[in-house]
Image (cartoon, rainbow, N blue to C red; front, side, top):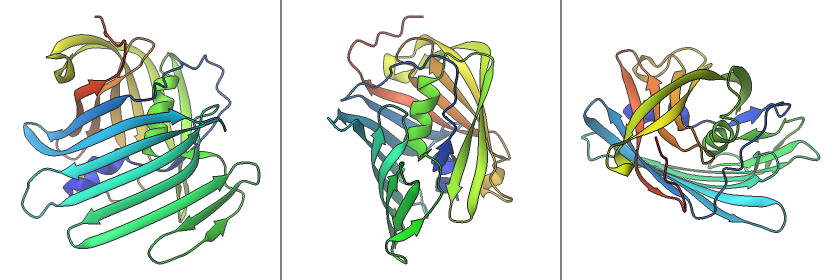
Length: 254
């Protein structure tokens, strides 16, 4: 339950690409962002996001790992390997390996954006082909897009969650609000951030009373680093807080 609440930001979604604002060039191969998942002072787990190399075919690799803290009855690990198109930050290949206690799940997908077909496999199905699928991204892709379009102050962009049962909207509001946030990765130095507000359609009941709303605090600079993401639950919120960062040339002056 707790893992599922933390993972409410881990989505697979399609993205509308008709944005009029200027996209920031936030990609830096070798970047590594380490987040602690917390509920108040309780540590729930760790998430590591890594940007890989940009290939000659116009794609770049990315990697996400998540594992829960040492909490009784809560033992989960997720390992995601992605390949994105650099020009529109949409997903080409997806691979996930997850463990929830003794249960293990493996998922694979490849998207052909010319034919708009998605080929999907997991432990129950093999090479299932879906047609007329719009370009989409997963959790990393959503984060990359929020960073890239973080300068679109005053605009709302809509993403679509892609699931086996259909698509559901995710709306991100790029507000004109700002906040100075203490960042543990920088020894609690305050960083000037832009506030992004999101809403997901969770399709009914969700773990811990999550209503689908989230708030991201993104550094107000060219790197647009998410320093904190809060996911609303019934009482308070679960937060992903930036604990470590490896990115060349990022000073994040206030």
